[in-house]
Structure formats: structure tokens, C-alpha cells
Length: 135
Image (cartoon, rainbow, N blue to C red; front, side, top):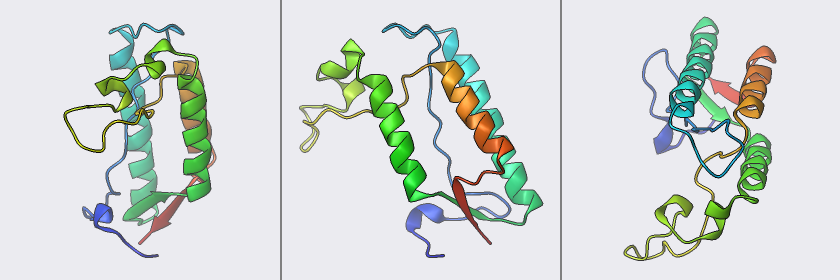
């Protein structure tokens, strides 16, 4: 397995993991009380992944490219109906003060929190097959 600068390894742990903040409200409005719950679930998922890695002597983890593509489509589909995805703002990656930051993009998962939890639970129960591990 090849490594990249982003795969710097801390002994017995994987590389940095991305946390997506989700909202259960199902509306444009992200309620502040959902954020701690979403963060807690993400931390629990990541801790489970790290325990799996430790138990199997893995020190690197990388998401399989086809899984990245599939999840990216899920994230885009979840953002599509939201009004917030149709305006230029820092929340859609647009910053007119920074060269090259004029194109809107989805920066995180804004879909249903229940779906997010089901998906991460399914990944964990399945033995993290969506990832490639290295020693």
C-alpha cells in the first residue's frame, strides 16, 4: 500500500478521520441541540474504528475509492433540495476574497441524522469493509 503525506501514522492509531455534523430536523434549520448528539455519534464510530484497528494491528486506514464516490453522491443528494446549497456563501465553499473559491460545493453531510447513524452502524457491523487497512 502506498502512503501519502496525509497518512502520517501515530503508533497504534489510524490517520485523521473526518467528522460530518448532521441534523435530524429535516429542515433548512440546523438546531444547535442536534450538533452535540451528532458529534457524540461520530466520535463513537471513530473510536470503534480505532479499536478495530488496534485489535488487528493496523496502523493506517483509507476509504476505498468506490465508497468515497458513493458517499459523495449521497452527500450531494442530501444537499440538493436545501435552499442553503443554492447560494454563494462560506457554507457552500464560496469566498470571493480567496482566489479559486468561486464555485459552490458541498462541504459536509446535511442529510437525515437517522440515515447517517444507520449507515455508520452498518459499516461497523460489517467489519469496516469500506476501508483498506495497512500495517
